[in-house]
Amino acid sequence: MLDEQALGQLLPQVIKIAKAAHPLILEIYQQTALWQTETKADNTPVTAADKAAHHYLLPALQALYDLPVISEESDTDHFLQDCAQYWLIDPVDGTKEFINKTDEFTVNIALIQNQSPVLGVISQPTTDLVYAACRGQRSQKYVGVHPAQTLQVRSRLQVPYQVLISRNHQPADWSTVLPFKAGVSYDMVRCGSALKFGLLAEGRGDIYLRSGPTSLWDVAAGQCICEQAGGFVSTWSGEPLTYDLRQLINPPFVAYGDKVVLQQLSHLSS
Image 1 (spheres, one colour):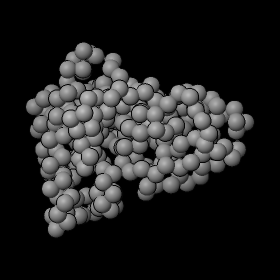
Image 2 (image 1 turned 30 degrees about the horizontal axis):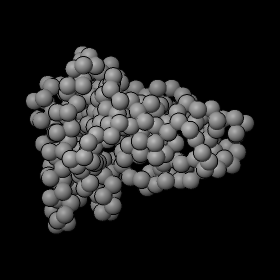
Image 3 (image 1 turned 90 degrees about the vertical axis):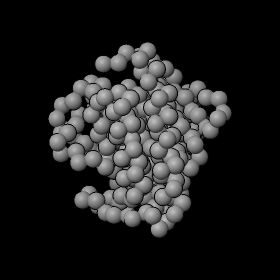
Image 4 (image 1 turned 90 degrees about the horizontal axis):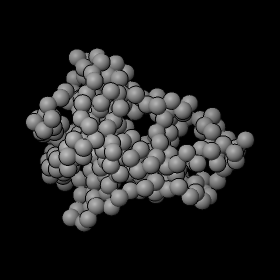
């Protein structure tokens, strides 16, 4: 297992690998004729960009630190076992956003140790934006060649609360979710892919709620970035998310910037 110092040394190299996938993705994104969109068994789309990034990232990460690499585009059947340490990636998170040309898609890379994300990188190919974090270091935001910005979740809340939600998934019944029981004032901010975790980490939102299904690779990098910026991620019932490969689908979860968020909303809705 890597300690915090080793994770800090590894992180810049993972950022380089994530950014090196950008030209592969953008070449296809900018030429619709190259998309070759297909539908997978779970009824989700996959494009040539997903596959190109997948085939680059797997050997690159293994050459950096030789561990199993679990990818959304892998055949995961033979990985459904306990694994103490592994890479977890989504080569193109937000494929629907890719297809819809919103630019809100990302490369997600996480390192999992003992069922917990200890390193995470989320990069946006169209803007050269990178969110990155590892255990023991504060989350950082990079845009192009500009100096890194240290991230901190929002701790002083103002109403209306900024609630980050997906462009493509609406919670089935928000009345069962604590923050929305008593007409608490909030604005919904829609955003694609794992970028919602980055917005939360840099203090541009208060809470990210997800009721629809997500896979481990959709959330792991964002969880690390959110938590290392001072935030929290848990199931709706308050239990920690775990990254056990025997269960690739996450339960409904909530990410929030400060424990005060849920405490204040609980008081208001009681």
